[in-house]
Image 1: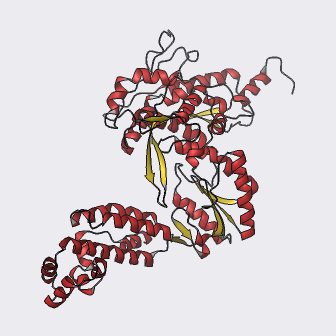
Image 2 (image 1 turned 90 degrees about the vertical axis):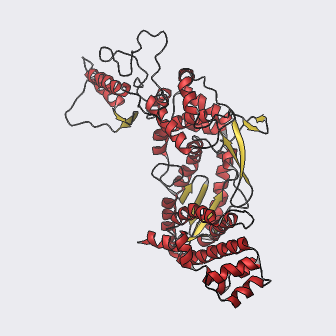
Length: 532
């Protein structure tokens, strides 16, 4: 194409490079260019449109309310051109503001140049206040500084100026996380790192800005820690694979995934999408923040500590390389966080896939596949997100999930707790509804009916143990309508408490209707309500 005398062709080239911009929730989103037939826009029109877009972005007002952390737009010190209030503008296109539209992205990195001013997005009042409300709603324990969620609002209002300046100039220094170990459901301990509440607010604010940029690039078969996606969607996808005849699963378990994340590899992946060096620098500092345990600060050379709002997003970013590799190879898979299942048609194919994918993870991402917890087996023999996938793609409750539920009930109904009976019922009612709601997609009517019977027997055992003395047991049973002879036999028998709880006499003394009157949640009834 030859250049025109007046530069018209150059104007068209500028138009094709810049494209259109759309404002969505205070962020810049690149859109497909809509070029109508016979419609031509000059470079001057493009510049004018950019100025209008910039003016809309700068019109940010601080929300008012008790839950606001009181963040305002910082005005650059010593800058005579800085507007006196957010939304102030100059002569229609020459002013400089915090949200200046980025330059046109390079052809090899579409959209990356639009991320050069992300720290300004992080520091927007609306974004910071939303992050504060989210952290407040999640509650959680204090970090190494001892500041609680209830106390952080006053701290933020008193230190908002230095906080914003340190974020905008990239000098923000996170504090070490507080190391806490919690037991794993299958045994062992899981290491958590609890950041300070201030660091959690900053991480949440960064996550809210990064998520709209990173999430659209993730695989459709990744379901964990993503907006609009859930474990049940992952299970439905896995069920569809089994219905198609892929009844063999390559169940891959990443050994201590969150503790083995390579910082350099992760930051390289983040830099593909983010051009703001200030943000990249602060994210790396969060990764390298030490862990305080027993009064000793341990420096972290790898890993992203579980417990921070930013960790799930970064974990998905690193494992997106795995997703893309599986898609490139044409595999059928589901991934939820670090749980990845690949569905194949035969045992031999599964063993080949396990070996090749293990090599990819260890060489490319420096991650380790747990040799004992990973396996190739039928889907009915493996657990995925608490479920097992039966013949024909039907979902069932995994035996391990039933065992964990019973272990939880055992802890609540432990007979040496010394807690009144009504309190035990209340604790069970806080746990059981959520558990059965999660497993509502399983074919589990029989399993839940047996679980109800077992829970009621545990409660009868707890009540009987509270009565303790034979005279008290006899007195309570007779008042419940049990004959004096049956009551005497049950009170004086040498059987253990669990065997006593299963006797017909005690079942008549504490019938199912009695538990319903006390308000005990019935798993079977709850499950059937979900089926209608």
